[in-house]
Length: 125
Image 1 (cartoon, rainbow, N blue to C red):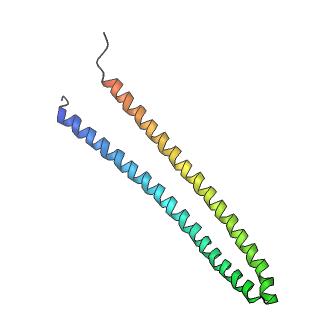
Image 2 (cartoon, rainbow, N blue to C red):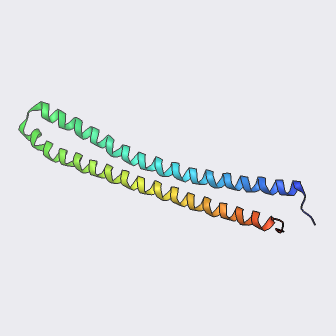
Image 3 (cartoon, rainbow, N blue to C red):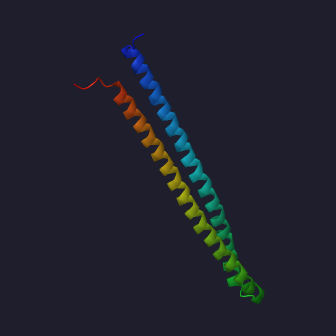
């Protein structure tokens, strides 16, 4: 049977819905990745805040043992800063990977749409 205009419109609306679902799924993946990474970073930064407070208290006490403890506390703070740098680096790489995959998927979808349009063209004269 022939394809009526309403059949074609219905098919396009279903394709549009699939595209929206794909975008929402990708957006959810992006937000989940960002959220998880920022939560991890925030946890390390919160730990550093507490360590810095301890260093300040030790410094103000001027007690020799407390000042000696500051050396290891400052090393731990420095290690945490390195962790944060690594986390941001990983976040950046993950984000770029997600964007590249999404672009590749979109490019593939566009090519499929172009091929489908090309197949529906009337023969040239």
